Image (cartoon, rainbow over all chains, first blue to last red; front, side, top):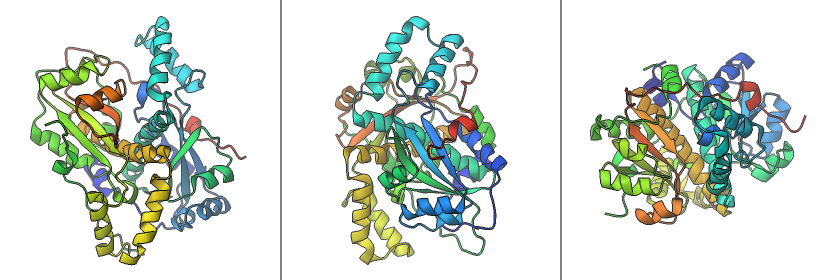
Length: 211
Length: 211
């Protein structure tokens, strides 16, 4: 599917057809495409909890302003952003360092520099940990929503939920921020889709403060 | 260009051809495509400072580990994430509320609810402000990198810079987080591109803590 058709075709869908499932193979394809997203030092601090079971989705919905799309969609994802993903000892971080050394992008004796760089960029404050986790997971989630659309699957990202209650309900460790939920499925053809929302213009996006 | 070709074709390019410019029209097209990214309540808390002038790029490079690609690329973007974008009075937020009322997505008497929702989701702590700004700006930046690739333009996102020094150098107000810099241009054909880095598998991305 053409990139621009995917980009303009992706819409946050409020009404999912509960009768149209998303197979495990299809979801794997979507996640596998989203996994190509870039991240700082390739740390990939993102994870997904995949909810398919109706009772589980209702337990999530209860903590998410009772948004009906959570249980109407065949799959709802809890998106997790690991605020500790940059830390020494994290298995993906360690694999990454080894791979960079193997590829010649870094030498083993740069390890001390590498540790210090991550500590200062990502670990020097609570805000930096959150920014690291959420920015990179934003890359991943955006890729996931576009990837889904590229194979005809609709999504809806949601901010409206009680993060602490969702954390407790699903036993999510404290080092994960929960930046969003994403409902995944197919638009209910019996409903009508609202027109696309307005966007800032290119000129509105560009700013300068020093001239 | 096909979506999957864009997704797999996008690479963080270390070597830009300084002799191949990116026209203003082309950059506008890229930003206009990226502007289609979704955001919580459509708040779009992202902005860009566009640096083209060599002296300006060198001033940025000085605060960014002297990464040569900043001055070699024809354009380098300072990506800004507005931690106050959700606040009452923000012009884009107010436009958005009016548009939602006009479209029938919200009623004028839901304003109090709307203000409380944004305050609790995005304003209840410093971490929530940063998460709001960086997650949504992550959506925008990912869209921008893919949009660039879809019209043949390469990018490189960078975390390695001194945020406080960049803020001071370019007089960036405190309510913006600076989640990344992005160099924009064309790969230097005289160089060779490293193989794509490893990615987590679909199974590695999926987690559960409660079963």
